[in-house]
Length: 299
Ligand SMILES: [Zn+2]
Image 1 (tube, rainbow, N blue to C red):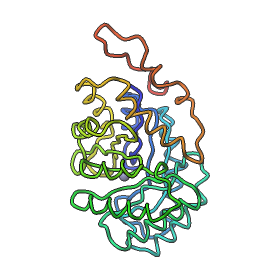
Image 2 (image 1 turned 120 degrees about the horizontal axis):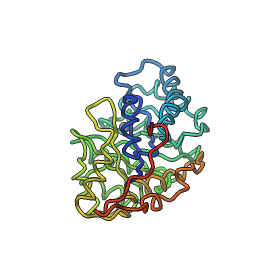
Image 3 (image 1 turned 135 degrees about the horizontal axis):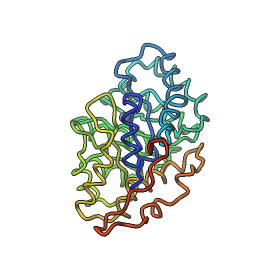
Image 4 (image 1 turned 135 degrees about the vertical axis):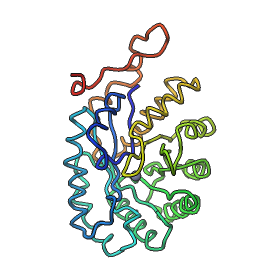
């Protein structure tokens, strides 16, 4: 089944990961701006990073016929330094018209501090002024519920922000309802340690349905799995969910969210409905044949 991984930090992954994702029928990814594994010392470091996200990584992905999109910001982990954050935010507009940019993200909170909240709101202001989509990181573990509440309060305080143009990421059992009831899109991160497992994500889908929800691997510097979305697909199949239901979560929903982006140009792979690809002749055991692999990895 073709799928999209809407949150994966490919700068931290090897080219072999791209190849395995292509074999698993990944057609597109989006890479939010985040921490570099260390705190950067200057705005110039972010300028180079934004060039990496908009120039280098799309070419690396294209070798495997995977379309690469990205989001720009200074992440919450480095937002304690408000003056550096302001310098970085001032750099962002010059990159917003680049073709693979989907919007501002992943902004949010890490430790729920006052400085993080200031920088979050200044990113919201930029997104509102430029009418960009927003991707939001919510804190982990014990900080998650309080941080998600704080984030939603700040979103609601800015009347210019439209919920359908925002995705709240890393939701779990105790925060998914907050995001969905606010009218936002939401995403579950399938992560071996601090976040949601594929089985927990399947449980959440069974409880809350498939509207405005997606899954991602958030593959990054930590121990993480760039094939977590295919693993979720397998878990959903094992439970007897239909191809249509699974496809909505791993393909249709991220595509629908992204289609609102200012720079969106419908790519060729999205013009063939995924349903048609999946409807290729199936073998006698009923499991559908895989769709054709990208030419770059066939040889
Ligand atoms: Zn991330």
